[in-house]
Image (tube, rainbow, N blue to C red; front, side, top):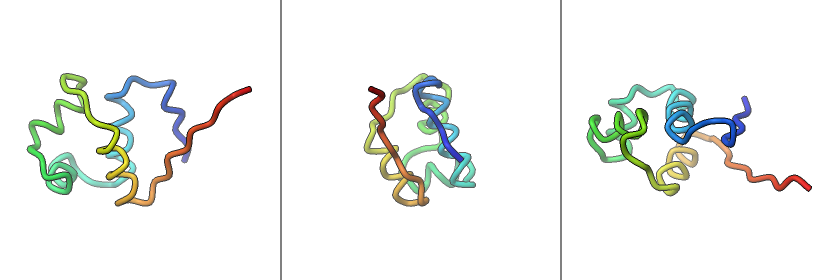
Amino acid sequence: MKLIANDYEAKYVFKILREWTDLTQEQLAQELNMSIHGLKKYENGQNRFFFETIIEICKNHGITITFEKKM
C-alpha cells in the first residue's frame, strides 16, 4: 500500500499509519509511552507530533518512509 502524505493533513497521516500497524489507539499509545488522550489529540489534530514519532512507528512496524523530489 502507498500513501502520498502531501495529499493529507498531518492528523490523517498519523491515523493511517496507526491503522497500518493493526493496533488500537490504546495499544499504540502504550507502545509510544504516552497517554491514550495524547494519542487521540494527535489523530484529531489538536496536538502536533514530532517526526521522530512517525519514524518510531514506521521502524517498529515495517513501514518505509520515502521522499521523492519531482523534477
